[in-house]
Image (cartoon, rainbow, N blue to C red; front, side, top):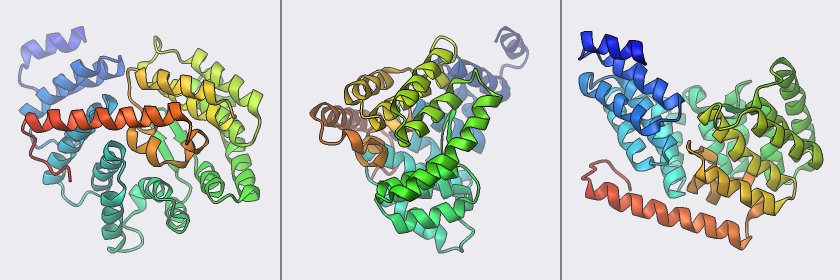
Length: 323
């Protein structure tokens, strides 16, 4: 940062310097300061599609989905046919409002262009299909995924086999779910063996073991993942292992622990997509907690928080479509 500051004195209007500063600060957990630098970069280079996407990700990390959508709308004004940005825009709407319909419509429009058009956003299609409890669409999305991951949330990556297990679990096809999660475990175990001190990889292994009914092992792996990647070491990755351990605990049947971790995860400095209002409301991974009064209270509180943010953004004069 000191070197960038020196360079900025010599080149005060170079957007790249503000952009790099923004990324460094964001990685350190200084989300607001990082965002301010990225915004300054866009002021100097207003048609920079990539920086606008990064601004959207910064807003998402702060849980400010309305402003993330506004940034993506600006990006789409520059490159209107970008499939990843079109679907991400409506995915953020799903996370914010708990409504998958706009994303579904966008995916249908992309699919109408040809079977290969959705390839770069097949993971988002899969998420949408699970959120809508549509197994036929989820199967098609898995085919479109090929061998690519079914989900990525910063440092957390879930394999295609994991996605097949999720789908089978949702449709209560236990033999298929077990086979898929066993395949996912074999893949993930190799990753952990190659990176034994990397918390996010161990976190995913714990999640898989919870799906396979290996409760004690899963909880141990989740706790070790948190110990390996504390917030003090890496705000981004540390937040994720904390947040995804809530799912591990829920799948292991430890409701009280899961709720404690969920509350801790919501307080973490970097917001997770999987702990957004829309994901908690719609996504099957949270089904073990549904009906629990404390869980439902958390979901209702997030809905109320989003309504307040909506009003605040309107007062600021946002012009984007929030439907």
